[in-house]
Amino acid sequence: MVVLGLAGFFPASIFLTIHQADAGYRKAKKTITLEELRTWAQMVAMKHARSNGGNGEVPVSEIPSYLTHLYTSPPEYVSTDSGDTNCYAMIVWGGGFFHWGFQVGTTNFMGWTNHESPRLYPLAPGIYYQHESGWGLK
Image 1 (tube, rainbow, N blue to C red):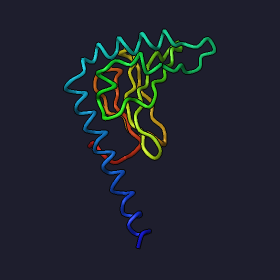
Image 2 (tube, rainbow, N blue to C red):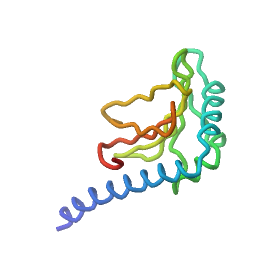
Image 3 (cartoon, helix red, strand yellow):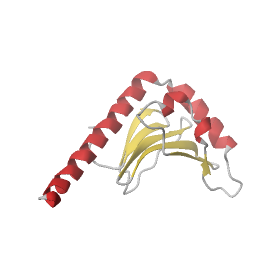
């Protein structure tokens, strides 16, 4: 009986997490000034650039409060890439089986997807919401 209870708990908890992640996306659309977000993302991408072209990590202390308070917990991490064609920051929440967040670049930045994050939801040119599921926003 316990196994059946746990089997039912997992799908319910993932749907609740997806709902909470998507609620944060909707909150971001209403509360975040996108150009302010882009300016911050470009600044940290350049500040934390690595000479070898790898991704840089942004300390939590440098993440603005409008992002740390968007959800009940602060971002899991913020990574940056300041390559020649893609200067962007990726802000990520979640853990375990589900992650979500934002990709923020220049106005001509084309966000990327993969098998783990199959969909992007544009907020503005070069700014995208993403999550690791085909479920959720339509």
